[in-house]
Image 1 (spheres, one colour):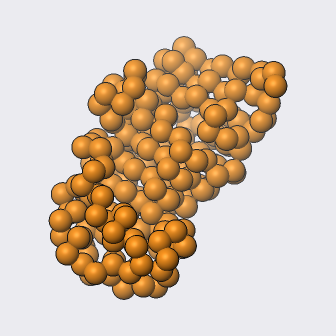
Image 2 (tube, one colour):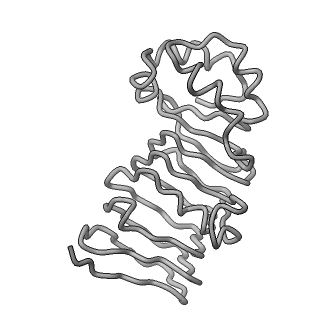
Image 3 (cartoon, helix red, strand yellow):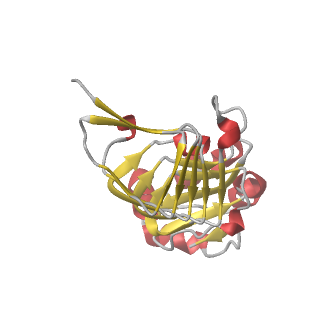
Length: 207
């Protein structure tokens, strides 16, 4: 299949609406691109989207098709941005050594309360500066630091054996991990209600 390349780089855009929706296009945002108070509409799979050295400032990002396993957010900075839609397996923030261009990564004062996140990580940031989605999503703050405490609880299904017991293996910069209870329950043979009964016992888990 022949793809059309759509490239935005080496400029600053303000108050623009960028629609990234053509599955026959590859969208390249960066390098040296600043988007200020822009609206991004994303309706393409991760393989069609490339972000690198972008400064997103006060932007809204509306994901209209679930964005899966997109780690390239860590190659750009996001400040005062708002996300909506479904994202799974995505990483944000500053991850030293992840890939060329990692030094451009940052996240601060962003709002994900209108999004549905599952398996999304926030790296190298101040996690309390972010707004996370509420239940049925839940967010483990500083997962490496609290892993031992969480392992002492009795978790339903196989969630404890597979997720909690491996929290200490998350990358060192991980400051928060957000999960979607219905999907985690389906995957690990339990129910959202059973998960919540344990989650409610921990101040380090937001829901």
